[in-house]
Image 1: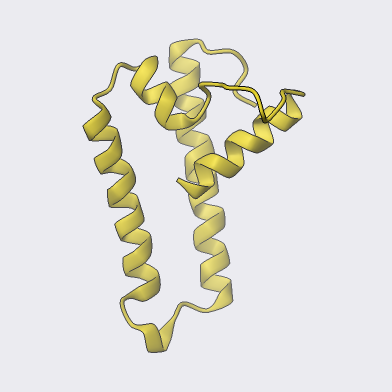
Image 2: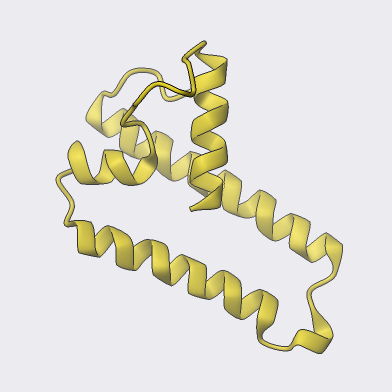
Length: 98
């Protein structure tokens, strides 16, 4: 969810949109509204990803992943988000997703 929020805000700033105005450009909104996916399925997907992150970071509190591993996981999550969002956007012929 955090990656979606940050990426959506960055995209809106880059487009010159006001962040205080309503929009429907979060990835979960696109999945629900344009892809007509079930809201429960989307929520379960987000929950599963969050559980995975929690598992990676908190399974052994004495041995947190190193800063390098944490950074790589965050960057990898961001890249996966962008690739998946752009794939969905291009298949739906949505306006430029950049």
